[in-house]
Image (cartoon, rainbow, N blue to C red; front, side, top):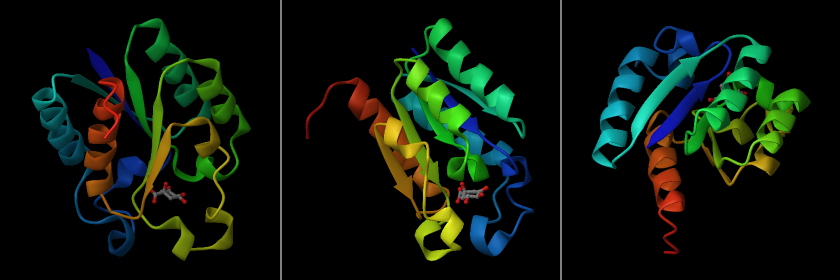
Length: 148
Ligand code: DQA
């Protein structure tokens, strides 16, 4: 049972990038923490980050082809304009949860709209890196078919 954690552009800079917005933890530390959490929930977590739209799309397709169970996705700025990533999510039958570290609604107007959220099962926004933990828990909950 595998899940995919997919981080988009500039998220390889976590810990260095605008720490007042995105915190001091690195992506490697975050991924390690989430692998442990997933394991405790009975899932193996595959982690991938890319600054390239096409690679993100390929990984979404591959996740389905390789039998993964669901995806936690932070599309970064692609959230706001990538119809291609939206279509990739629509093209697979896997549940996807969108997560944003920052509260995008408190920020610039261009961040208020997500073109991808409408094809996900839900979105978690504004709780910092803890949002990734919430997203994994929500995905596991969904996969188990729990209704409360
Ligand atoms: C982000 C929010 C996006 O607007 C931004 O472009 C990012 C990170 C977040 O996690 O808060 O790269 O997705």
